[in-house]
Amino acid sequence: EHLDSPLNRSFLFREFTLQAFDAPYHFHPEIELTLILSSQGKRFVGTNIAEFGPGDLVLLGSNLPHCWRNDERNEQPAQSVVIQFREDFLGETFWKTPELVPISRLLARARAGLHFVGETARQVARQMQQIGQAEPVARLTGLLSVLNVLANSQEVKILDSGYSAASLSVGDCERINRIYVYVAEQFQSTIRLEEAARTVHMTPQAFCRYFKKITRKTFIELVNEYRIRYASQLLTGDQDKSVAEVCFESGFGNISHFNKQFRLITGQSPLQYRRAFLQT
View 1 (tube, rainbow, N blue to C red):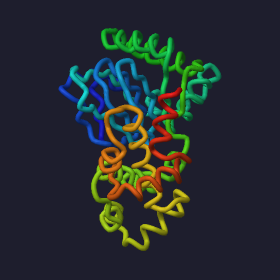
View 2: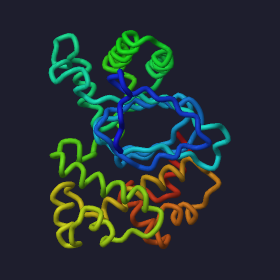
View 3: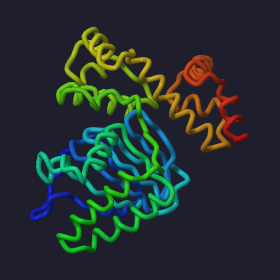
């Protein structure tokens, strides 16, 4: 995604009120802080899939693929507040000043996605909504204050520590992200190696070698992991769905293969996974 900064603004502040979040799985060079005000569904960050609801607060590093998708249970308008900025929007060396080292470390950690909860999320939610009404200087200092709160918080979870594209060259990062986008958009239907290879202008053979070299896993392993993560969310988030329904909704063609892959990746059968979740 290409973002255009408005005139006389060094960073983007946007508020959305939609019937449902409609942005596809995408990535951009800007760092993004997203606060969900209302609605619920599933959040996709890198290869992480999780439920979201009101108060969900996530900091995303540069070029980290992401999207929010509402589910059929959602009856509220989809509302969010989003702040987006380039890492160098205040200059190449700004974050290197001694007072800002904690924020510099925060932005480095955000390459894998950070989810904030508790009092941190509530405090930042109040501050973010005030930024939208502030004068230009207060708007900038408000953003720095928000980042400072996040940098010093312990109420945080890394979303995708296995995300492999964050440390790659710009060219490799874009290629791998395009593959992730293809998988995220197609995993519930048929995934074709030839189509995935075409997204990065490679032959299937060259694509397989390249993907294994960069990610240290095969393309089919990525697809299966993505499908199983989605299935895990269905098993725990909707108790009315049968294992067979979860299997087919997650993109698997038969239950036997689904059960085998689920146990291989999680160490449990789908039913055992659901029971363990209900017990805790």
